[in-house]
Structures are given as structure tokens and as C-alpha cells.
Figure: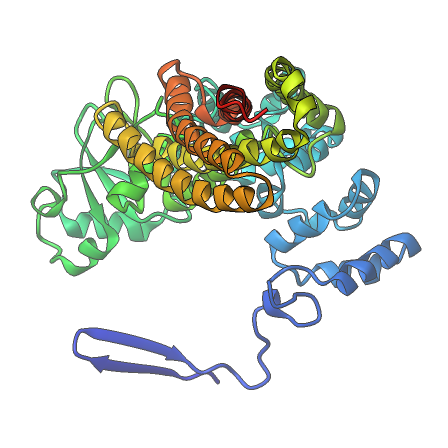
Amino acid sequence: MAEDERTLDGEETVLADTPEEGARPDDRIDDERMDEENTLKREFVRSVEDALDAGASGELYDLVEPLHPADVADLLELFDKDDRHRLATEITDLMTSEVVAELNDYVREEMMEALPADAVAQIAEQLETDDAVQLIEDLDEDDQKAILAELDPEDRIAIQTALSYPEETAGRLMSRDFVAVPEHITVGDLIDFLRDGRDLPDDFFEVFVIDQRMHPVGTCQLSWILRTPRDVQLGDVMKRDQTLVPAMLDQEEVGLMFQKYNLISAAVIDEDGRLVGQMTVDDIVHIIAEEAGEDALLMSGAGEGDINEPIREAYSSRVRWLVANLGTALVASLIIALFGAAIEQLVALAVLMPIVASIGGNAGTQTMAVTVRAIAMNQLTSSNTGRILWREFRVAMLNGVTIAVLIGLATAVIFTPLLGAVIALAMVINVATAGLAGVLVPVAFERLDQDPAVASSVFVTMITDSMGFFAFLGLAVAMQVV
């Protein structure tokens, strides 16, 4: 029998459970299935493949059944499309709503399209509204209508309302399952209401207090409620100063609000100020991870960069930026062509000029990455753009002078002092230009209401390459190196 040990140490209360003899630890850390990085072991995945190929349904079920829903989702994503469907068929009753909610977007969409509408509707009814919306939002319109027709009217209306909001907004992502009460009741009334348990969300962190118009006027955390005497009016203990999230607010801005104000949950309001849902920190974790990864991929021109993305979509999203990059590379080539005669006279120019362009490109990428992050985090605004530009220019000058001294001395020793002076001066000019471009290009895209992470790298590279070649070759001709 497990024993409960309660220890009081000042204000801290500790409840310790002694596990029963022979009790197993959490299956997620089972050494037979999971490695030290909490991912499925290769040997375990191979054993599932073998059981699937052999048609050993019982063995296959026994292997998968102990896994956490998130690990079942990971397992499905490790298989190709055909084997994935076969595996899902063999473990049908393990394909719970929790597993579906954890699936990669592309994998989930692919599997939902393969299921009949009533089966998808059955899964959607088990999910929270925001997860149900995510389940069907990317399906074809005909498939959406078929699935919605199979849902209960209440669930159908909630999902249709969510789908009416633009993608990646709080209205689309919010949960419509929350607790809201009027402020005139007592704490005891609220506790009795919560203990009754009917029509309450499975998980919630606070209770929203509303007026007669459904406008949020305050909030009460569960910890406050439990510490307050029953006869106290809710309006006397609730927190009136709360952070409200507009339903049309972009998800990235919602994530920044949670980060800035250290929120666990927040009320979502419509255009009339009525409470329509809530955002919770578990949603924000996914948003922050998604936005961070998205920015990194956009800066590289890799599109969504999902390994489960269809080949045609991956090709389409990547090739257009490679074509744009080809166009910008031609600009640098034309500049080189202008100095073709000088290069023919002194081979050292051809040897050294890629160094100037390369260092400038790296310096520009560094500054651009800092700028894009600052824009995404709302750290760089119209109020401080000038100060940040001046700061990055000074950093670039220091970097430029340092690299210029090193390459200038090396070039003077290997070739001539005059050529060393030329490349040193060209290096300072290009790195300084890179610092300016790394700030100005993303800021320009931001001012034009374009995502600065999307095309900044292409243009910054074009500027640094072109300036590097022009400065080095132009100075070489002007200073009569050749």
C-alpha cells in the first residue's frame, strides 16, 4: 500500500507518495522503447515494422499500446504513407483524439482525408474546440462540410465560428471552453459551482468574471479562490487589471503578450469586447516554437521546411527563392565583368575578391538575424530604429577594421603592400555596408507590411556581394594596382 507523507516546513507543504513495490515507472522512459533523448529507439521502431510486415496484429498492438499518445504520433510519422495507414488500421482503438492532436499537420491532414467523414467527426467531438478546428481547417471545403454535417449542432457552430476568423489569429486558435461567472456571487457559490463539475473544461487555470453584457471585468486564479473565505464577494477579491486578447490579433503578437506579462491564460474578446474564449500557455508554447522555426526557415528560403511536406509543395516553395537568388547573383557577375580587363592583368584580384564578398555576406547575415529577431520580438520599432542602426554600424566598423588588418597584412606579405591596402579598405567598406543593409532591408520590408524574414537574405546577399566586388575591384583600378 502506498503511503502519504505530509511535511510542514514553514509555509511549504510537501505531499510525498511512496511507490508501491513492483510499480513500473512512466512508460515514456521505458528503456526498451525510449532513448535518453526521449525519442523512440531504432530497435523498437524496427520491431514494429517487422510485426506490421508479418501481419502479427496481436504483437503489434502489444508493442504500441503502452506508448504515450505523443509517442504514438511520433511512431506514425516515422512511417511512409502506405505503412502509416496500415499501422493506423491495426491499432484503430489506440488512435485516440490525443494521438491525432499530436500529429504533424501534413500527416494529420493526409490521414483525415483517408478516413470517412463520420470517423473524423467522432474524433473531432472528443477534442477541445481549438484542436478540432486544427483537425479540419486544412481539409478541402467539401470534406469540411461533410464532417461538420456529422457533428452535434453545438460543436458544429463552435467550429464554424472559429473557422470564420483568419488563420493564425487568436480567434482561430482560442479555446471556447472556459469558466465565466458574474461578480455578485460569493466565493462559496463559485466553489460549489466548480465542484458540481457539469459543463466545465477538463483543464483551466483561472475563472473569468463577467458583467451582464459578457464583458470580462476581472479574473480569479484558482489559488486565490481556495484561500479566500466562502462568504466573501467575488468582486472584492478578483483581479480587475487583466490582459485581454483581441480575437483578430495575430498569433505571434499573442505569444509576445504572454511572454511579456508572464501569463498562464488570458481572456479573448471580440470586437464588441465580449468574452468569446481563452488562450492558455500550452497553446503559446506551440505558437512560439512554430513562429521561431518559421522565421528561421523563411530566412533560408526553405518554405515551411517540414520533412512531411509533399515534394511538389517543397519544390514550389524553395525554387522561387533560388530563381530570385540567381537574379541577384547576376548583378554581382555584371560588376565583375566591368573589371574583366583588370582581372586578366592581375590574377591575384580573382584570388582575393571572393574573400571580400564572403566576409561581407556573413557580416550582413549576422546583422540581419539580429534585426529580424528584434522586429519579431517587438524590440525594434519606429521609436528606436535610428539608435539600432547607429549601434549596428559601429559594431560593423569594429568588425570591419579587425578583419581588414588581418587580411591586409597577409595580402601585403604574400602579394604587395599596395594590394594589401586595397583589400583592407574594401573590407571595411563592405562590412560597414553589410551592417547597414542588415538593418535597413528587414526594416524596409516591415514598413511595407511584408514579413522581413522572407526575402531579406536574398537582398542583403546581393548588396554585400555587389558592394564587395565593386569596392575591391574599383579601388584596385583607382589605386593603379594593375
